[in-house]
Image (tube, rainbow, N blue to C red):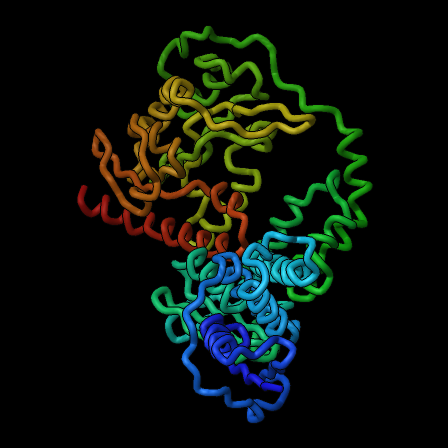
Length: 476
């Protein structure tokens, strides 16, 4: 009996060297015993005869299968992989395509389990913010079912390249400093952070996006097994959300559909009759706007809001569902993120003016919901008249464009936010414009860590506002 000592159980290179030596010595699978450090004995390995290893090739599918199966925790995986290799070389090179073969089926099941664990890790890792000597770092604790840390590293390095992060597990750790990925030994859960300042925001967002009409506990447990719950912040509120799902779904069914306004407007579709001399007069005039077809389905015009002498004007895209019903800009979920970011950037919302490029809500009915639709160029151009009048009356020092629609309304041109973000440009007439993302962009990000990272970038963009206003004033 030959004993093979495996030092790194997930290393394909090490496994390849072992099996090449075994094949060279013509050792059949039944005469090989595989040992790892977890078995507590790496010193009883058998020295193989010093023979010339013949050249041989294996199907490409075997290499991919072996790479993934080695990440499984089953101690028999080495023996099964070697047995498969032996049979590929001595029996049938097409064996991998015979899924009814018991050995092939068993290894495919191990591969499937590793795939599933990798998916769960990418979905259920939750970063929390800590501070060290270099600033902010995002740290997560995860307990994988298999030895997948190395296999998962590329995903997290690519997905969170702009962040400094660490992932801690009992099997090992990953550390990324925006340039280099390093690995370390496993650590206990006590070394992981338990909460951070953004967790309440994430839980509020999770509650807001939880759909009681689609609540399916059986499906949730299948996709989010309870073994992961102890490390998910949102797991603490899931039982209450499920318990209340029936009542909330019943209330949704009983609620009448939102009825859009279809009453006749005061003014003709040709637009305002005359320029208003004050913001209040302009707001009153906009109530009857029919400059584009959006007025037909919207509940009301949602005009800008803020002081007439505001030094800064924030321009968004259009009102959402809650803004359309309330008649006020930025009061829905995106508005709550906006308010929070303003406060973090030390900006008093009551001292700035907030408006939208388009004043009516554009949507598509879907059941009892109204799903946001992006305004087209025709609608932006027709509504630009109102935005220009607002800016003429306020005469701000700076206008902040929140997203691409706002940039188009202010410049008349399409623009890539990724290229203009954080830059201050001068518009015709000398008005300075700072470009950043719309806060709804943060809500659309599927990953909590990405939301946190982009939220901090958004706050950093807003923090430039006070400095930009001061610079404009100094240059005037």
